[in-house]
Image (cartoon, rainbow, N blue to C red):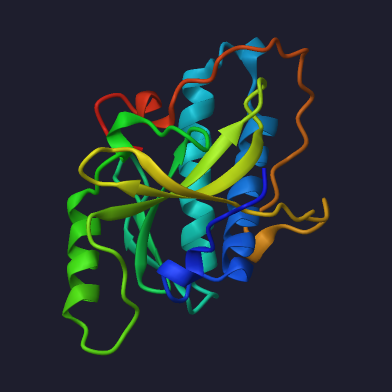
Length: 210
C-alpha cells in the first residue's frame, strides 16, 4: 500500500533521507541482536527483546554523535529507561508493533517527550509540530523476530490510535560495514529456530518502559 502521508509536511526537518538513515541503524542493531540470540543456551524471546532494545538504543546514541539532526533526550546511560531522541527537534521513541497498532505503553507521551514538545511550542522561530500527537518509530518483526518493516507512526495522544503512518524505505547495508563505528557482532552458529511470537520490548524489561 503506497504511503499517503509525508512526515516532513507535518514535522519540519523529518525528511525521508533522515528516516531512511535512522531506520537502517535500527534495523542493523536488531539484526545483530537476533544473530547473537542463542535458544539452545536457554535464551527466550524475553532475552531477545532485551538485547534488541539495548542494542537499538546504543546504536542511536552512537549515531547521534555524528548526525547533527539526531539528539538524545533521555537514555544515554542505557538500561531499562524510557529512551527518547529527537529528529530535527521532534521527540520520538522506538517500539515494536505494526502499522496499525503499537503497545499500550507507547500510546501516550512520557514526561521527557512532553518537555521536548513544550520546548518546540515555546520557540518563536523553529520547527512546529501538531499538538496532541506523538511519534513512534515502529518496528514490525517477522515470525522469527527479525525486523521486517519499519514505520514512522503518528499517534493521537488522547485516543492512543495511530492516525498516520509512513513506511520507511529499506536500504541494504553491506555486511562488511558496521554503522557509525559500533563493534561488529561475532558470527554465531545458530540452531534451527522455530517460529514463535516475540513479546513486546517493554514486556522484556519487566515493569520498566522499553
